[in-house]
Amino acid sequence: MVLVNTRNPLNIGAAARAMSNFGFLHLRVVNPYELAFRDARSAVGATPLLAQAEEFKSVEEAVAGFSLIVGTTALSRRDPQHKVCDLQQAGRLIRKRLNTERVALLFGSEKRGLSNEDLSYCHWLLRIPTREEHRSMNLGQAVAVCLYELARDAKSGTSQEKVARATAGDLERVTALLLDALQTSGYHKNSPSKTNTRSAAPADEKIRRLIRRMYLSSADAELLLGMLRQIVWKLHS
Image 1 (tube, rainbow, N blue to C red):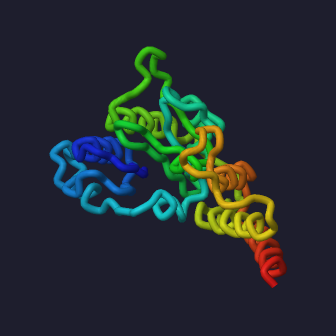
Image 2 (cartoon, rainbow, N blue to C red; image 1 turned 30 degrees about the vertical axis):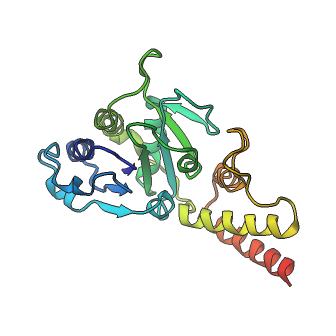
């Protein structure tokens, strides 16, 4: 579980309590608004889990070791650039991967959710099926609903898949090398300014989403990294 830019320490505590309830014991936080979150009274029965939560300065660092990253969204203010699954479908897909891979589930801040840059690290998104007139949920409640869906039928997640998937760190290295090759070759200049329209997403976000849609295995990522290193070396020589 990865909480990004959470503003209220009580919500972090409530999320930790829900995690403890359903047996998900690894919490990561990215730039929490309130540094005293480890003392949140809402973490009833989950104080050890909260004490062991890992802190990171960026989403990139927080998800580097995971091979599946799923973001959460209410779809209230943006047109997503990802596949969006409802909670039941997402639960089935995630359970199949939990037995063999490391999976990260991302939640954004209470006020704005996940940013476009945060979402660019995700393979796909999930949405809790709330009513259209009131889509946004309290962060702690949203965490509890998602984890209940993952825990309620855990046996159905048995997977025969043996292929080791590329981690987010591997995919980020592929992204960086591909961007280097594109810039050096003149395919594109620097990323568009943030003052541009929302449709003109920065190049690194577009490339990052493209690489994740390829669903690379660990072996394929290593092969692609080798090819890109050779291309970049030739371009710079």
